[in-house]
Amino acid sequence: MRHVTGTVERLGVLQIDSVNVLARAHLLPLFARLGPYDTALVDRAAGRAPRRIVEAWAHEASYVPVDTFPLVRWTRRRWAGMDPAVLEAKHPGLLRAVRDIVAEHGPMTSREVETFVDAHHARRADEGWGWRWSTAKVALETLFDAGELTSARRNAQFERVYDLADRVLPPHVRHRPTPEPADAARELIRIAARAHGVGTLRCFADYFRLGHQVTRRAVDELVEEGELVPVTVAGWDRPTWLSATARVPRRTAARALLAPFDPLVFERRRLHELFGMHYRIGIYTPAHLRTHGYYVLPFLLGEQLVARVDLKHDRERAQVRVRAAFAEEPGPDAAARATWPAPSTVVTELAAELRTMASWLGADAVVVDDDARGDLVRPLRAERDGLR
Image (tube, rainbow, N blue to C red; front, side):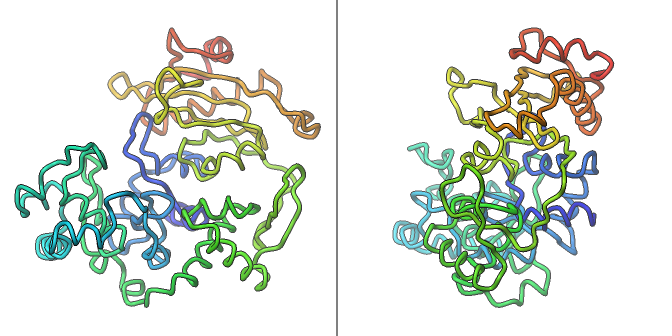
């Protein structure tokens, strides 16, 4: 549990997503950093007292350390239709009614809440907004945005089970005053900078979806306090800062598959400039526009992203299926080319990491699909000992 919660604290945020092609999105960044771990620890940390992590709207819907919850209470996702004032004008009293229902009967799913409101508010939207949410669901999510509600747990269908935030949060957080937005922003940027090590305004702002101006002000204050140090990064043409807590290792011997929602993959420009990888999440891309697959994971080996693989966990057959596997080419940087691993090393290490992941997921084997695409498909098939 110390390893799990310590990693979440260091990252600052674990994005949640309902797609379960391989494993839940929030579980994979921990696997990339810890290796095979007991995923029940995450459920325990989020769903039982003493709670160590809690759901909030942060980067997107995310798990954050409980101490971070007051810092994100003032943030909003800014989706059309989720303005509290507009919702109150259109449906007077609905927000209070939904909050009172949860207060009296919670913890509850949105479907359970809908049984307590009238048919008009429970009806699904016709215009397709918000995945056809009912008005009651919009009210729940608006209250979730405001930090009045959070998730007591996730049920077997991975639905959020809402409860009053004051009943979920531990006392030391519940009784803490909500900080002023400027103070909260400074703390969030401090967390983002610590997680990045080195980054730009865009990097830091994107981590908790903060605006440019508030991020700029927070960075200036952290520079004045000595917590951020202006630095120059070769090839970058904009101001960059190093966290004063960052430690630069002599070398990195990492081996990890990075999920589409991994914090290292959040900011695409940074990813491309540091590792030379153009990356797009396939699950949000029309099938005919996907270049590398549906659920594609970059493969980190040493200090380079050397490959990407499209994976699926076939639970019925107890297999991890490789649907595509592509090698990356080293960029023009001479230092990167000098340390780029040999193709045979990439295949051997990728096969080993796939097998480790399969074991962690409870799968018996890694199988390369007959119609799999990519230049690494054939050599991966040849790694039979590494895959089974």
